[in-house]
Amino acid sequence: MRGLGDFQRAQMKHRDQRVFVLCQHLRAAIDVFEEIASVPHGEPRPTEVAPPPPSPPSPPPRELPAEKLAYTVKEAAIALGLGKTTLYAAMKAGAFKVVKLGNRTLIPSDGLRAWFESLPTR
Image (spheres, rainbow, N blue to C red):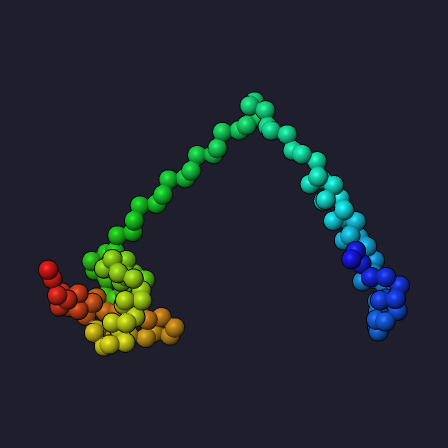
């Protein structure tokens, strides 16, 4: 069905003519898009193919300074090589002390180091 007929329009209450005009414009635009899509697109000529742009070099991994007093959860996860979910589970279990400062959760570095050193090794 390509739109509303006279009967359907007559059944609608509080109709605004601007909506119908907008729908007519949208249908015309869709017709143009369908016409463009129906024309097969030719293969680009070899001279028209541009070389891909060089990818930017990836930034070096961040090193955390040893003199930090506390880490955010994200920084602690990077420093330990763990996921944030693992750290949140350890926080919930009370494995180390956590400090809340406004909306930020900070983990003191000495408590984080002590917890990490207490983990079992193989």
